[in-house]
Image (cartoon, rainbow, N blue to C red; front, side, top):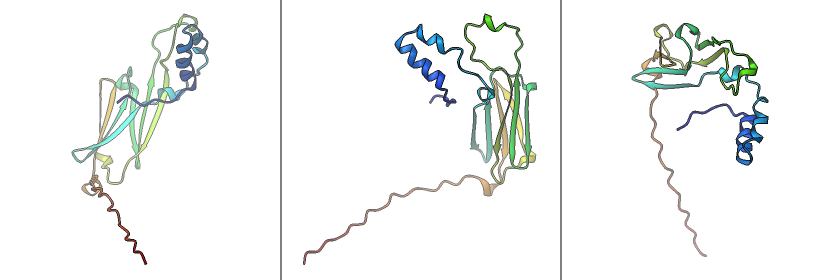
Length: 156
């Protein structure tokens, strides 16, 4: 399954234009302003072995440029992608990588042991693990199909 991304009208126009005429699509290259939304990391969270695991994709970042905090029941992941090379705007053929700072917040469920949270960084992914109270662990509830009720029609 592919990664979900923010819908961009200019990217969609570019895709359509490339189908019509490859030279036509160049006119859309400079129209899209890239803001901090482009830096917002993709996040996934799941339960594993009675722990809540939150993973955030941060390719190209150094662990020292990532900050993970918890205040109350809110997990905050901050970071900054620094532009280390000095390249003039006119020298770019195409630029889709964004630089700057970002912040992503997530409400934590009740029962998350925030005082026992741990974070690791490997291959551009920060992984935060929080133990969950046994009462807060997800319980699977079976879904039963509804039985159709038959209505008998009697003739008089």
